Image 1 (cartoon, one colour):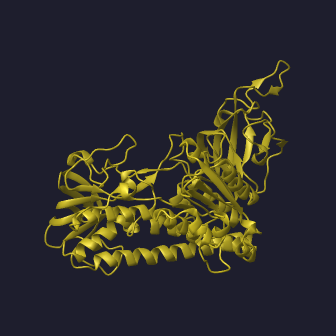
Image 2 (spheres, helix red, strand yellow):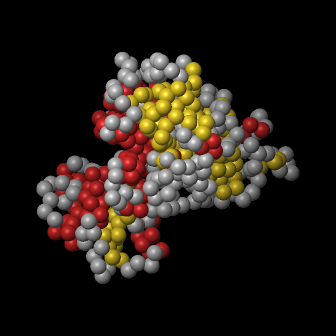
Image 3 (spheres, helix red, strand yellow):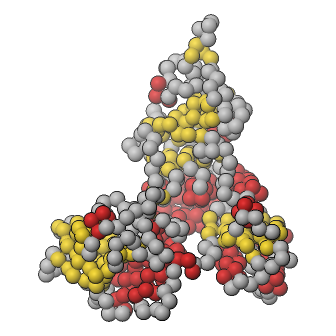
Length: 541
């Protein structure tokens, strides 16, 4: 069934009950690809999507593509100097949001009609939940619709994980990535809770727009899963953009600030200056010292005391909380194992990971079990614990990438198309990843830390990006390239590329690894010139 507009609710006109060959819950990459394939094979398919704003899935609406649109706009603003004044910053941000909305709206419409216009596919907009092993009820704006299907595919994705911090869900100005990408006005100050790669992408993006960005990290090590030299290079890049980091920082509470912004109570382990009283209980008139967050490292008491800043483009201000007077009646700082600060900012991004989206599905009614981490439990064929029910994409607990959701479709389709030997998750090789910072970071396979832990005999290959002619031509010489090669076999174990266009070049390395090509293949390959890809000749030399 098709509709003329992508926001219309598509429901059957003859009966509130549908019997179909396949039901796909969720309009994400794996599910929509599977729906089109099943329809082409003559199967009747129902696709249930909870929101008309999510046709096409997370990637095109609130994930990969809108964020990359904003990142490119932010880079352009930095190159053009549009991030230098409040007026030009606001104009650049407004134009970026407008373009992001245009792109997502266009893609959403195309994705909707790509399925809904097919005779074998019915798209129903509403939230689905299981009522039995092969039955689902979909709550639509026009009432419930019951669907019975021979095969059911769960493709509901993941949702931002919200930590249990008082005030985090109720305080205006606190956002997940979804909300932060759809603001009408650019925040002059931004605090990001979480320093994983999603948080760092937003830190880089907003810094390029001209926002003063502060990142709070729970522990003392930056990017602890990455090699130390790579992590240091990424941190140096972000700090060069103006991003500030506060380590060993735990957010204890969030509340509205008096100036209309957001106030965070933050405890920093290892700092000796401070007190354990909460922000909202700070006595008035005690003359609290304010500390610019740029001076706080979270490891030593190096912060300098200044007066509160009135410049909205300064970083979030920190107030030491004083609670205990000295013998002479003057306030003094307590000396606990951690210091408590108040941070004031315009907006907060909660970037503490994503969790499988299973709430409200009533999976128990179908006999579908979850893992200890809350993902739908699947085997190597992505079959759940219930017969003829599969789970694709982020909801099954695998790597949270759109291209993995697409590969999940391949796993499922190989079972439905009569393949002699189905493709399985275990057949999947060398999943690459890219983080779109000002200098993109991409990697595939093992890093040095992991190779050492595995007891492998390896050599490390390094190349500064400044040595790559194309990087110099592009005026983008920052970064480094690093590869891990098994000593005796020449087998490529992994690569880490902090480089312009690394998100393209990493796919060449992955292909070589998939084909079991030795490092000498990339060393001797003939590449066009000048390109970033030809740097692989020198990296693997």
